Length: 168
Image (cartoon, rainbow, N blue to C red; front, side):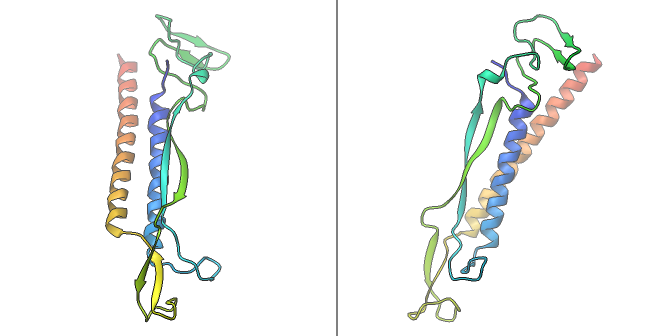
C-alpha cells in the first residue's frame, strides 16, 4: 500500500479552499433576495461534502517508490527514483487524500422574516431571506482555514525532511 503525502496534503488544501470559497459565497449573499438575472428568488445556503480518495490500482509501476526493494534505483526512461519508502510518486495521479464530493444546497436554506419595509416583502410584510448565520459561517471559515494551514504545514515539514535526508 503506497501513499504520497503531497497528494494527501495537496488534495486537503484544495478541498478546504473550495470550502472557504463556498463559505465566502454564503457570507456575500447573506441578504440576497434576487437571482443574478434580477428576478425574485432567494439565495440558498451552500454546503460542501468531501470524499476520501484511495485507489490501490494506481499504486503500481515505475512511477512509484518500490515497496519491496531494499535499495534505490533510477529509471532513466521516466526520470523517477524508486526507493523502498512505502510512499508513491505517481506522475500527477492522486493516490490518496480527499476530494470535494459535491456542493449542495442546505436543507432549510430559506427563512421568512417580517420586514414590511423590504422591497421584496409580500403583501403581508414577510420576506424570504437566506437562512445563513454569520457566526456559523465564520466558525466554518476558521475551521477550514486551520485545516488548510495544517495541510500546508505537513507538506512543508515533509519537504524539509526530504531536504535534510538528501544532505546526510
